[in-house]
Image (cartoon, rainbow, N blue to C red; front, side, top):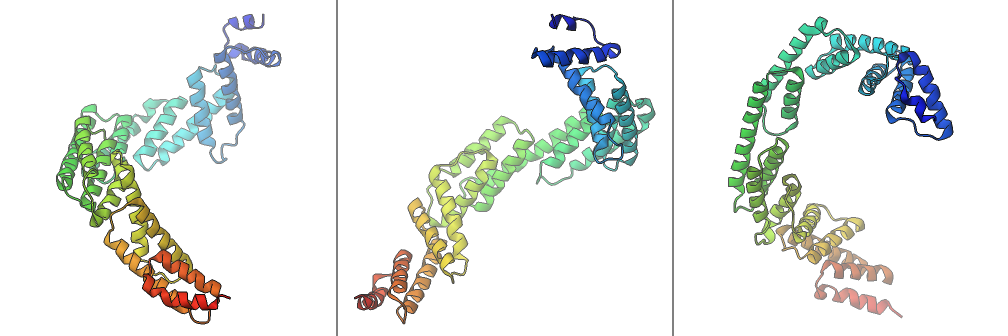
Length: 361
């Protein structure tokens, strides 16, 4: 019976009756028609907006959102909605006059249109926005191919502003052509070369091209080349290349073999500590752990690993020599254990072992 009461047409004139029926549904735990429940929720939002101080922070955004939601659901023009629309129109007019960037101007014009402002009065402003968007589109053609966002932003702004479609299409084609050329050049430089710089550029070129919607044939050719680069035979001096190739693979959307991921992680740790000063226990322990991780990963031994190994041995030997003089058996034992982990030769451990043996009961 309650459901049957919703079969009439509801307008602004009987909106109060509608909300009364919805309250009955809530009490009776009967689901009302979804569209009418939407009206009720949006009307609540409009009332909140109508009761908001126009000078409060974020008030204009609230007004615009309330108007857009009411339009989306077809809410009847209740008094609170009319009040909010008037406020939204005032906000939009101010925003149009104060806009500095073309994106701000377009957003303000959109708000004005949504709130019911007479757009014939803003025709000259719309024309100005279109001109600014066209200029932004033209400037984008001279940008370096380092970041896809300015290009995409210029295209989107041009579309919203009503720049002729053929101009936008031509701009897209120009930039995409440059992106493909960049990938082609990067492929030539990287093909068969174990160069960290070349593989990084290939990854970045592919990432840029993918964001701009580069065609699948161009993407696949570059991806296949990148994958082949990861299938080569590697020696120690290639680990900087492996590290960079693994780092850039995500941008290129290329899968990385598990062993190369481990090698890259190991090389990052080893190369870091190879340039560090090892003068305290914490750094020493971390450096030894880096070497252990590198060995367990099966990574071919790069020069940085040899450098780090020598530094660790030198530090461990110095600590061992210091511990043999006037130190407790516990401290000496710790120095011996550390030296063993660091790879100090047995011949350099003999003197410490003798002192340690003599100190035991």
